[in-house]
Amino acid sequence: MNSLQAAVQGKGFGRLIRRGGTITGHYGLTRGKMDRALACFVDILEAYGCGATFPLTAITLARGHWDMDRYRARNIEFAVHGLCHVDHSRLTPAQLDDHFGRARALFAAHGIEAAGFRCPYLRWNEDTLAAIRRAGFRYDSSGSLAWPVANGHETETYGRVLRFYGAQPAADYPALPAIEGGLVRMPYALPDDEAFVDRLSLDSAEMAELWLAVLAETHRLGELFVLGLHPERVYPCAAALEATLDAARSLSPGIWIARLDEIATWWAERARATITCANVA
Image 1 (tube, one colour):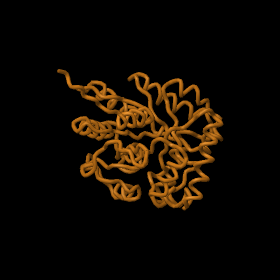
Image 2 (cartoon, one colour):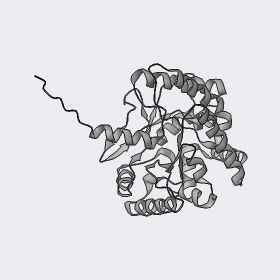
Image 3 (tube, one colour):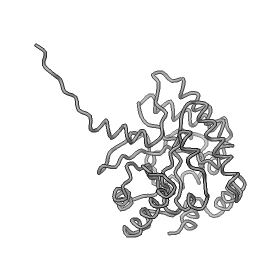
Image 4 (cartoon, helix red, strand yellow):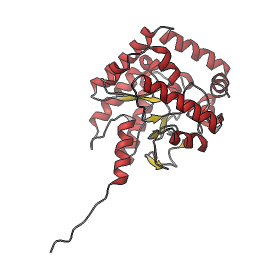
């Protein structure tokens, strides 16, 4: 399945066309618009003393001539989002190995030793995970959990995309990192910005309400909130992001706002840690 087929299946043709117009409107075809969106995003993060992880396809990286060091110096991690934006659950193991090898080579050519991976469309299977391990990635954030916070806002298209992603109900599964075959896996939280803008048609206050509900529940449970916001939607979602970061910074007990590579490293080290108790006479 190519990227167009997967997008039509997940979004529906009408929404795909509108989505294309939205991306063009935000980015245009110039690097300047992308840079301004990323700069706006990073400015917001820096105001709250935190960084973020941006998954990026290797083809986009290679074609964009982005100044990656400028963003990395501002606490941004770039993870691999595939060689190109296709449904990785439909690729053979040989195709996956080829895609991942080429993607890692393109990232390395730009001075990035990428630690992590996220599948386009959040679609993966066991072959995908095996190939991610073979490629040498330390973490994956392709699995998704749907939080039951959209009460009164649900639409048929939102339900369809949850099924397309294979999202699991957060009420039934813990939102925690897990080490599977040496790979740290961290679940992505839904609803995300795409759901807010393209599927639920929420205003800024409604977006903030849903993200704040996820934040409150993950804090109560001591779990992980992997908030999803594509740079192209930073402008309509900026107020909701700021409200969420402001609330996160005021929580007690405090929480760690970190990049995915930082969380993966900490979780792996936690798993290796041992405690020795000495008898004291």
